[in-house]
Amino acid sequence: MKNKIKILAVSLALTAILFSCESNTENKPTTENKETAGHSHGEEKKEGSVCGIPLTPEDSTAYFNPTLEIKGEVENKLKLTVDSLKQMNVLTVDSFTVVCQSGATTSESVQFKGVLLKELLEKAKIIQHGHKDRNFYIVAQATDGYKATFSWAEIFNNPTGENTYVIFEENNAPIRKGAYVLNTTNDIKTGPRHVYWLKSIEVFRVN
Ligand SMILES: Nc1nc2c(c(=O)[nH]1)N[C@H]1C(S)=C(S)[C@@H](COP(=O)(O)O)O[C@H]1N2
Ligand SMILES: [Mo]
Image 1 (cartoon, rainbow, N blue to C red):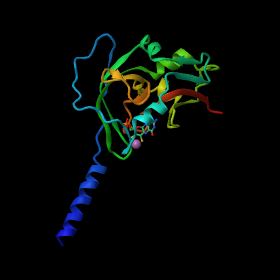
Image 2 (cartoon, helix red, strand yellow):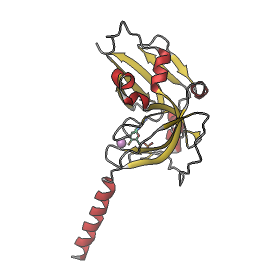
Image 3 (cartoon, rainbow, N blue to C red):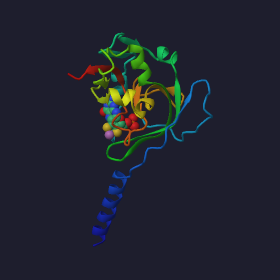
Image 4 (cartoon, rainbow, N blue to C red):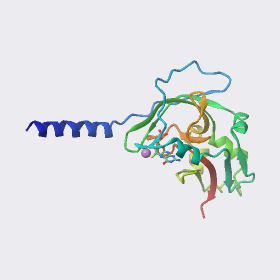
């Protein structure tokens, strides 16, 4: 009997952990050079996980990619570095939390610096034939094959465009999982379109 109660208590606790959903806090950016007042971020971040599966430092080294490519249906294919991103309009978000589809929080209150994906795509110039030519999808891909997809309208005609960043710094230090991460701060669950080890942004035309 005692054992049954114990098992019940343990399974309840596990269920609570699994479904401990956190709502996405408002993530408002501030512009660069108006350095945000020192936000403390508590304990050191763990090395990283894919929703619970731990990643080793060796994984992070193997998947590291120093450049970011913007390619596909664009006039100017770009090969960007952290330094070239720093020359652009750098924005700071004070507190960003990654929540997996399962509801589990994987990273809490991270401060980051980055550039809007929209700005990168404007620089690369999507090849458009007239203003009705706007059926494109944009794929952000990582070196491990992980991908996230956006539509043209989300980026250029929707608030998501003001909330999707390619970032190069977390808590005032270079990113641990690759040189760049893509984040969409207004997604309900921020995990799916949080792409670490980011290596390319590719524009595809819907045929
Ligand atoms: N490159 C890459 N990015 C990825 C994943 C992955 O497997 N590879 N997993 C995603 C999932 S399922 C989640 S929940 C978040 C977790 O992010 P974090 O561990 O950095 O907090 O990253 C997302 N980004
Ligand atoms: Mo996830």
